[in-house]
Image (cartoon, rainbow, N blue to C red; front, side, top):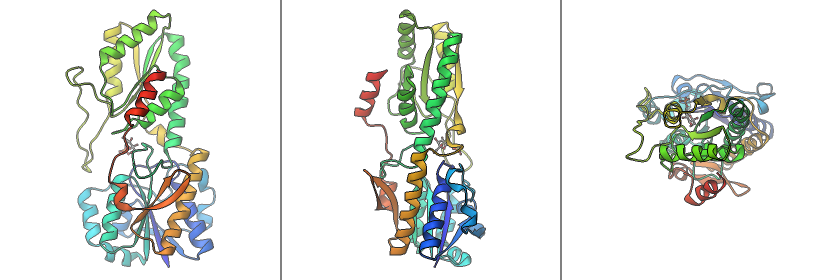
Length: 341
Ligand code: F6P
């Protein structure tokens, strides 16, 4: 048997650990040949792939990014690939395909499965927005990086008596901003699930200043939105791949807070730093377990499924579930968060 494996969408710490685990379990234990498809669905369409052996995965456990490469592919091209799924698989000689990707890629995985290509999905998201798994690898690393950034920003903000607005990733959900914000002791946390009032943010900082504190850190998720009727702000547009773009809220907040407070306020956009570099121990372990279970799913013929962490167990859930719902921060969690601000 020959198993194809590809990494799709934005990269994420732990992707390489999954690839390594697939090779260890698939090749060493079951004797399957593992074919690494390059640049996600693009490599599948263009027939670009290479056999991945034991030597190729040495050292991958700790390496960020993906050695197979990843690429965003326009929806129309993915639809074309789905329509030609069997031919593309035959051209590469693969009997099954493991797709490691976020919600969009897992939605595509489901379509490939329906089109006759046996697939197993592995969820990856630093945003922690896939509801069907308790968490995915990448999130813990992103939170770790963001928390360290907040820790560091605190000492410089205090030295210069500044307000620092740190913009963190999270297009539709505020998991990174909320978790790193709590862990780093940010003074304000703004997330997409809870539209904010900039005047309330300014008041919170003023009250802090009135208590003798002369600096403040505001953690804002890139997808945070102002309450209707307050600040006028529109998030980006649509990129060439048909995805909505975000960005700019950190700059805008810093600018407006400076005006409202009459105190220096600076933006810090953490951006892709959050998903680069070596994965945390927790992410390495989860990625390794997902790879192991993905291979076992192929071995048992449990196609059309993806690896999902449920409590402490890795289960195989139907791919439909992976895309059924975006996991937003629930009101109860937000209440807890507000109480520690
Ligand atoms: O989905 C993960 C994510 O990191 C988002 O938080 C972010 O908006 C997006 O990817 C950015 O990805 P790219 O710059 O690769 O389009």
